[in-house]
Length: 196
Length: 196
Image (cartoon, rainbow over the protein chains, first blue to last red):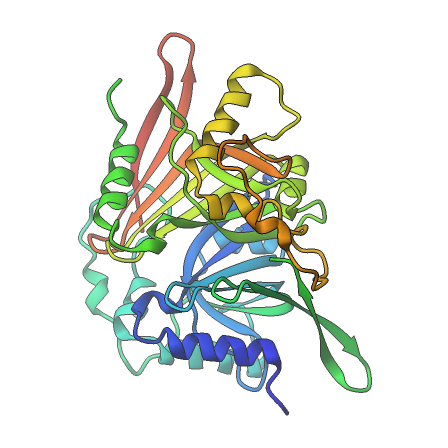
């Protein structure tokens, strides 16, 4: 399968900004049950194998999970500070948590767990994010067994892009990629140049 | 008036990241009329004089204006790549465009216009953002008269923060600031430490 143009542009941007640790960070917008938008920084964890879906790890106890259960649509805004490129990914998010017993999904969640550092994994043993801080010793932090699979709080998110808005601030070019589902050829992408 | 803690933290972050051009960029999330979130990078244009409102310049013809007219709530996510601090500002946005004749607002919009560079101003004479690109010569770009006030497409946005979620990834501390309107003392802020 040939790599689509937007994916090639993204892979190039990731490559040309790779010297910056923060280049794998982007902002994920969701809509809360109160109808208001929410927006936070998360880490790019690669693409799902053999697909265009963007992987994000998160804590099941975080507010974004409530948001996504209420409204599964999301927009990622990913700005590359060195190459001056912005990618906006709009699409539906799938939540894969410990209550998912589909063997394929269990495996994806495990793979994402083992791909993250021990330090990242230890965070999921910490107290509930967003709750008032009670300064108890977080003795659990060192108790991650590196051979053990994901803990309950660990959750994998998969964003399936339907539309990508690409802006290059150096060339002042902007492209919109829209996905079309066709029964014969699967997903295909329509590209249009639009005004920046 | 004493500077509130969140504002002092923000001013410190702006100061300690000032060597990076992109440190004045943040991501603005809105909700579209289709109920889906949207998210894009915009530029911090300072605070409204004597207030906590965050200023953003934008093009009246951009999609975010339709979003804000439909749902005035927004969340800014501002990540500082050098100091590892994140600020999330949730609040209502006010649109100040050319149809606003309140003298105070006319003046604010003019001030924002003249505070931006000639190059920034020239963008508002370009073709409608987001529309298909017709490669006509944009001869208008050089026709900005530096003494003339804002063009029709120029719009000032003011975000009035109601809640600020501050996260410091170096100290692993997170604080929530919630505003409370009191008749006697005006706006005041409640601060709580929460789990990161």
